Length: 448
Ligand code: PMP
Image (tube, rainbow, N blue to C red):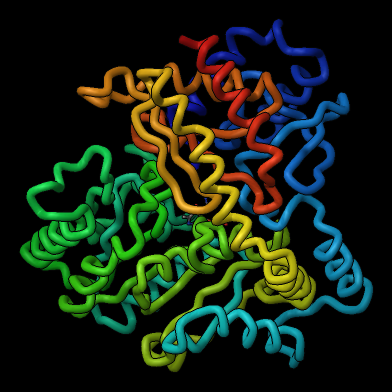
C-alpha cells in the first residue's frame, strides 16, 4: 500500500503544477481522472507512463529506462520469457475453470504444497490476495466458532467488504470490523521492548493483551491475520524466530494463525521460500498472491485439512477465474524459474549486499534512522531526529520523487510515510545496486 500521505501529496502537487507536466502526461492524467474516478491513485507528482518491461527494468513512452525497485508482482522479472511462453501456449490451447478436470492444476497444487510445511496439505485458488484473505477469515471463523481477528495497526489485507474492514492502512474513512482489534507491530527500532528481552516476546505480550481485551468485550477470538514482513506497517522483517512466541500465544488461546504471504512469499526474504518459515512457525492458513503468477491474476489459500473442513464441508466455493489453466501455467513457470535461476539464494545474497551498500550512508546522513530487511525486502527509515525518531515524512516524499527523476522507482510505507520500501523484482542483480544507492544519495542530498 502506498501511504495516504504519498497519494495526497502527489495529487495536490499535480493539481497545482499541471503546467509543469508534458502534454501527453497532462492529457492522460486528466482523462484518467475523468474516466476512472477519484479512487484510482497515481504514483508520483510527475506520473510515469510505462510501456515495456524486461527483467528488473521498465521503459517509458519516451524510451527512458527505469530501475524498478517497487514491483514485487513480476517477481521473476518483467516479461520473463518462461512465463510468457507458458501463458501463450496454454492460452492457445484451452482456458476454462476448476469445474473440469485438469492435470496441470493438480500438478501445480502438488508442487506448491511441497514448498509448504506438511501440515498445510490443501490449497484453493482464486485471483487476488483480497479474495484469499477474505476466504481465510471465513474459514478461520468457521473453524474456531469465533469472530474476532487481530491485525497489526497499519496492516493492509485487501479490498473486499470483509478484508477492507480488516485493513487499518486504509485510514479513518474505512470502518474497521467491530470484532477486530489492533496490535502494534514488532518494531524493533521504536518499540520499548528491552524489559521483555526481545521484540518477539514484547509483541507476543501485546497480542495477549488484545486477545484479553477482545474477550472482555464479549468477542470470541478467531485468530491473528499477519504479514510476516509487516510491509505496510513499515517493513519489520526482524530476526529469524521473531514470531514464534506470538504463534504460541494464538494457539494457546485456541485461535488460528493466518499468514498473509502476499508480500513475503515466493522466495523474497531469501532465508526461506515463505516469510513465516524464516521464523520456524507453522501457520494454520496461508494466503498468497501478487508474485505467484508474475502478473497473471492468481492467488491461493492453503490450510490444514481439519481447519478447512469446517468451512468446505458445508459451503461450496467456486471462483470463475481462480486457478484457470492459463494462470496456473504462469504460476508453474514462476515456481520453475525461481528454482532454475536460484532466485531465493539471489534474493538473500543481493538483498544483503544492498543493505551493506546503504549502511555507510547512515554515517554521513543523520536523517537515516534505520536500515533493515531480509532478502529483497528492505526498509530505510528517514527521521528528523535520531533521538525522538520523529518520521521525516515530507523529506521522504521528496526523496522518492527525486529518485523517480533519476530513474529509480520506489515508494514509502509506515504510518509516518517515512520508510522507503525497497522491494525490487528478484531479477535485481548486484550490478543494479550502484544505480539505486546513487539515486537515493543524490535525491537525499538534494532534498535536505
Ligand atoms: N495482503 C497484503 C499484505 C497486500 O500487500 C495486498 C496488496 N497490496 C493484499 C493482501 C491484497 O492483494 P490484492 O491487491 O491482490 O487483492
